[in-house]
Length: 339
Image (tube, rainbow, N blue to C red; front, side, top):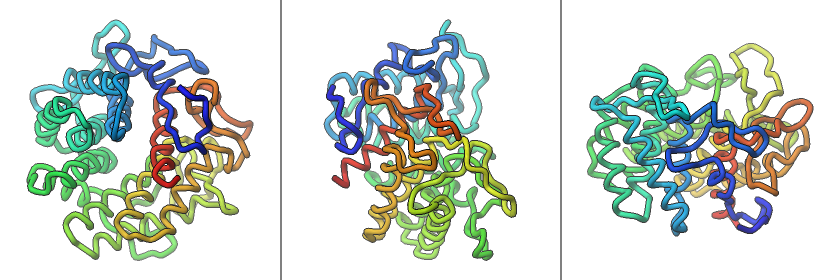
């Protein structure tokens, strides 16, 4: 593959391939080299299925990755629709099936594959697993948000799907609507991780149900979230420690997943509203990876195509794990559209 920079708007999958084998996607790496003893997790495999399914004309190699990731998810799923999360390198599961965040991400991956992947056999199998997973509900709002994103993907191509529509409605209800406090309109008194996914679900739920009030609330949430994570014209996202209402926000360590979630949500807002300001916010997310961040550091390795694991006060964490690499690719998929 070419060693072009992200500003070329060409997402690079070479490091994702490096992190994958015939079982799934390894979670961690030391610099660019896989750390096998950490094994695999459903969370990251599902993220991987999302981005490879977004490719409109995938290469044979990317189609094989989609098949591998989909097979992993169906293996992780039990008869109730719940999922296991952690698989060791010895191919033994380390946990029992559940409906935590990994269930939500699995549903996101399955919904995206069922809706978008060009290969019919991948779409069909993903739809079967999605329908089974949709029998579950999670008590965790973020897990419901991730599942809601998968439901929204499916509803865009199959608006008659009552299973997806019900799941999306339940996800929006689990998240809640903006508070009346203009200084903190977020429905929860804290920000943790992948925050923009919650606003995105409210936006798509309002758009797909033609509920203008719900749509407006989601856009209000996302506008506020973008504003509080922008400093001097560049992104300065909530760090891994999160932020609670009324407390000062720490600057580090920032995680690429926050930037990718903002890019996803702002791209959806741009499509729904047609307002160019949302595309400008997507460009700001792209620029974060290119060095327009609090440390002025490029957040990816041009030699490998891998994304760095975090932005610290001393610069990038040079490890190139699955979550960060997927966040980079996901954001550059949006950059390609804007080129």
